[in-house]
Image (spheres, one colour):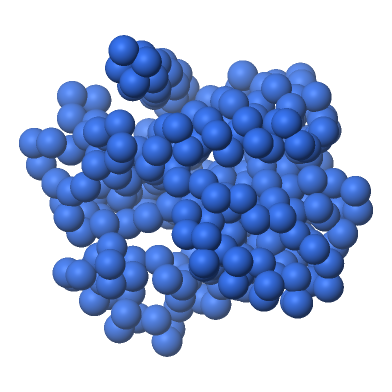
Length: 288
């Protein structure tokens, strides 16, 4: 990873932080993001101490399109190449919340925020080929047994926290598959990754106060460490073993078949078109 630039969303804690440390240790120039400046600065000091080299902190709120656009502009203005983008940040909620643009928060942050961010950074990533995009998804996507609810993507009629989260993770895998198809032959690979169930600040008390939060707090002693969870993410971001492999879903460093909905190319293309329309509509509303 010497001389390569890596952008990691949500790198101030958990899997993202462990990924930042590991890739910085391998010689990468790491840019990681945090929503909170204080937490970000604390993580920056810890990452640099563990990796023995400087890293760069940037503020980013994936629940805000202006924040995403501002972050992307700063990176593009100051960074001549992006060799790896790790779309890691995410959240799980047990109550319905919305983003600044009015999208249901899990779909808005876990999928749409990264959809917009990737689109904004993609020209630089293509220029840097061979390059990689890693989408941190989850085996939770298998629980979306009926696929995405196209008539209620924002879960306004019915909201069940883990069901909505599972659909957002299905959207992650579908997005990775469709983006990989669109980038065939460019030298940019796109793969989704399941990190396992990891003991991090994920589902913290401010996000999930009900059964979801209870599960993660009670199960914490039995879950993977952030370093264990980051292992396959690091593998997808840096291993020469999978050079050129794209459109895959990895778990425990192994190629794994995602759900049938995630393999439905027509549905993946539909999600892309719907996502484009949602981003465009929100951006136009902001301009008006």
